[in-house]
Image 1: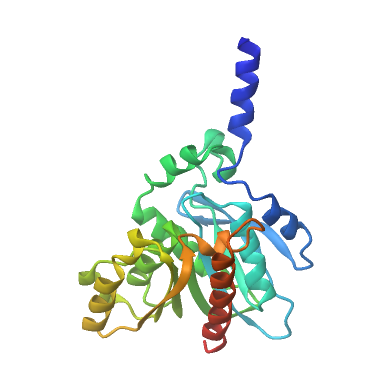
Image 2: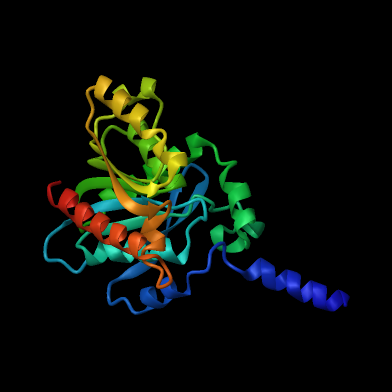
Length: 264
């Protein structure tokens, strides 16, 4: 009996924070150049997933901030999808070094294990990780020097905060994340584009205040709400088992993303 319990525990520890076999399968078929890189700042090393587009000219780079689930197969798949759209993309694992034996997301096992660590990350460290990732992609020979930052859920909120921290980014893509404090909004220079599902009152309750705060600060903020979609619709809409509403929202959001990036 003890052996069975031990085996069950080991299997549970090996289960990723969120099942995404479909995302991994798509990723493994990608024809684009994808690689792991380590970005350093101070004494810290941040593991990142990097993707390159197949284009003739230098491209804008997009730094992606993962969900509360960490750097999952789905987030790595989004890196590839941005590369497919013609952009360099990089996704840092903000949990680098937070796991057993210095591991990151992949070493933390269950969703609770990941959430417990991610909620304890200092904003100063997150900003420093992002600064390092932005600097890394900006210096790539294939980059045109322009960098956009986008994030999902936990990462959406961090995108808004990073726009406060770094006025040099070209745009912020906030996917169902909370806004920065109104008193910090005057520091934002980049346009902020918001993506929200209508069935997400927890996040959407803060949109009116964000609109008011950004307007008072004289900043660009365009929130779009997709009818019938829920929180996390960019991931849920890609899941083969996802609802029609989430799938439609994801498709509409991608059209908007491409239109925004085409103007940068």
